[in-house]
Length: 67
Image (cartoon, rainbow, N blue to C red; front, side):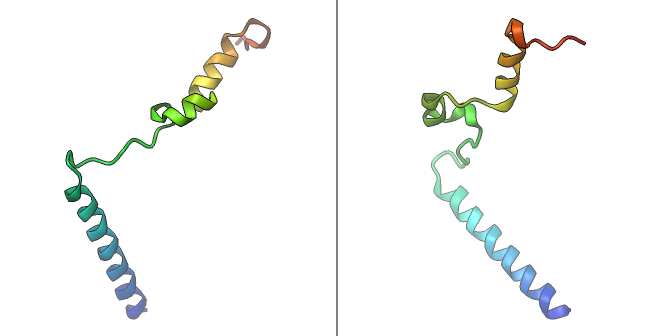
């Protein structure tokens, strides 16, 4: 049990150290955005965030959901 906890702790420490190296190695110190709407490739394919797609579907008159 203790051995498993030690191994887990070491793996977490190594992972955090690697993330720190990545942040310190970047000029602005930030990660790139992982949001769909920030990806030019996704926009070129017409893929949007699920919230945007839902809003578009609800705005179409024939598919509009009334409460």
